[in-house]
Length: 253
Length: 286
Image (cartoon, rainbow over all chains, first blue to last red; front, side):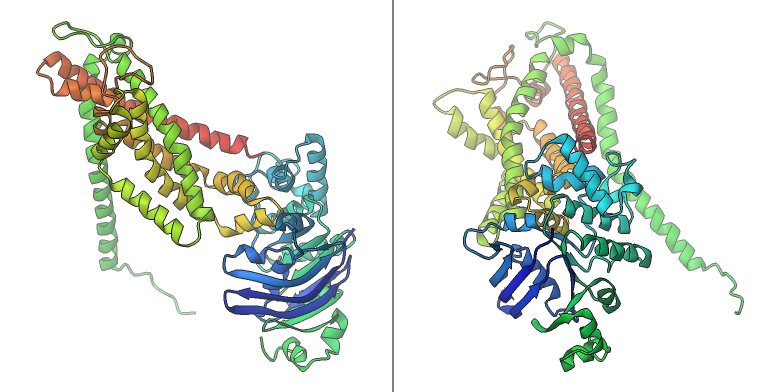
């Protein structure tokens, strides 16, 4: 089951440059929330703060409160590794591990965290690949083909399966379809619909139609600030802020 | 649409052919010395290669026959010691430089490795002599240490370069799964770069396999059987050196045969290590 995320006064920096300013928002469980905004507005930085991947950049740091169920992920004594196990991520460019087979890719998160029950692994790999709608295409090549030998769209669904295999509560997606063709894109979008039943999905997208199609809620970011956050329908029909309206009507960005 | 007639541009054709010919000539110039050395070694050495060469130890001056069995085994022992020191330290430093170092200390390590790489092998031999041999005696172990030290900088730098070629997105994918960094480095980043890392190790290995200078006053050489680490030990390059500068024709022939064996052993080792790692890559990938 997905869980909600409560973000309070989140700030993030790259060196001296502040990338996010005082972000506060409540992300509802088992819904998809889209993050939209022009390039460089901090969308990616925001989701990377939600699983503490932002700080892996040597220049970067973040401050604030991000409550995921019972855990404040920036709290004292919270290990980033534990945060990331509960908050999975899918990246813009498909990035399967090239040295591993399809099976190895999906099992990697569990195996490299010390989980070696073979039978259970087989089950989880199958379940994850079914959830990401890739099972039928790869079931005969699981241990024969490298993850990198798949097509771009398949690779991205493999990455989704890999993220699902560790059974996270939240799935972050950073422009998951922007490197894919329209058919693969629509497959990923269908998938997001199904994933919502079991996960909380946060998806960064450049494509406003995509946001409208998959997300119940949409947040508009501009220059590191959260301008407006509301039901998707409201954002796209009667936005409260002039800047949101300008952006979605294509006046800038 | 107007019809476009294909026209042959002669100047372009000539330039193309000329460039191709120059490229082929360059390749030939690179291959030629290697091929020449190898062919010459085969011509001079193959006649003295027989079972005795691989099973017997050198005969005293004046007696014909004998072999280099002790030197072949001795080289193996020294290289094993050298690799046991050079490979873990080299790969480890390479991992540090690529994955962990930030700022000045990393630069210092990199600079040190480059300087060490440029230190003449005879100087490394003298240093190891002063550290390990003086006050004790010549030993296989000290020879291995000298070769190990020579392997470290090459392996360090090549490992670093190979790890840097692994795209950052792969590291992020691993971190994003909640895999601890050390685990992700060992099982994902290093494994992704494995073939390149192994190539670097083999280059370092091949380079020190033929080293004579650092062994002169460490391993020292030994005309008798010995595999003990604390005793002087024979080595192929040393034996070749001794035989080549001797006044005896019989020894000259053995030197040629020894050189041929040395080259073949190096090539065979590289080839088999590559073969094994390329297979292990797929087998271990599950």
